[in-house]
Image (cartoon, rainbow, N blue to C red; front, side):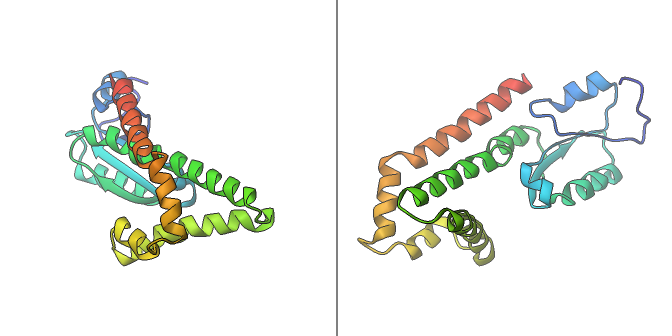
Length: 186
């Protein structure tokens, strides 16, 4: 594709692990935006983290912001290193949440809830918890404490999650995804 871009054009890349310098070199074009959207962008609920090469104009950055904003929310970062970090959290994050949803559905069926209500029950719980966190501005721990009665069902469930290492597993998953993103970038 080298030589196919004019001076005023912008290249917007969503290729995981492809550094802006690599893209610019490969295409012979310096106005590059590197972005990491996530899959909820398909329904306008995505989160995109992006940065731009120093050669990208303010107009081009505005264009990138408009494109990414049409898919949900967007965050500009001044340093490309944050793209790999965001890839591990937000780019891969939906898969982590999908796994949690699957596990909750499986558990609900196991304890005897009817199939026809389980998916709605779980999905609304996950969406509601996320929206409650967004709209109240409260920290997740504070909200978790509000729903956890001493000696109650939630406390017992959380104890099992902590004993099973859920928090540590999530930390290790994000770190592993970040290391892989850096490896891909070279």
